[in-house]
Image (tube, rainbow, N blue to C red; front, side):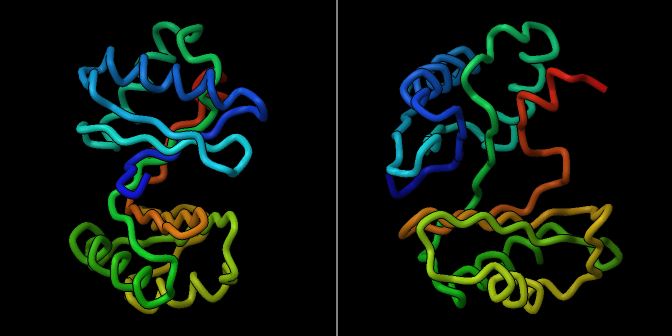
Length: 175
């Protein structure tokens, strides 16, 4: 899948269950035509929905708050706004563009990198992205997080608030 906008993680050997659960939830949220694909990375699923991926994360949090048993196999959901080739220049350009549109001059950010099947080094990616963002860095309590998710021949980029990723474990634990 080349145009995914959600990265879903699950337990090892539960990929099929998590993909089905993801599609069922997206159908309930209003997208009966969503698609999901199990990757060759253990526990990882790519999904495409017509919905805003950040709105999907918010809806998942609402479901867990009211009916926690509805989310059994989905562990984490990361919204993806842009997909580029896993090359430093492409990642830098996409991250810089998204950050410029969203992060205010007086706001801070952190870069979070997760790579699977990639030859790039995390520190190298962080340096390139930070160079493009040109805002204050705050590793502990940032206003924004620049997510760089590399899965083989795709790099997914997002600029989100720290609470705009879904973790079923965190959500079920409660405030």
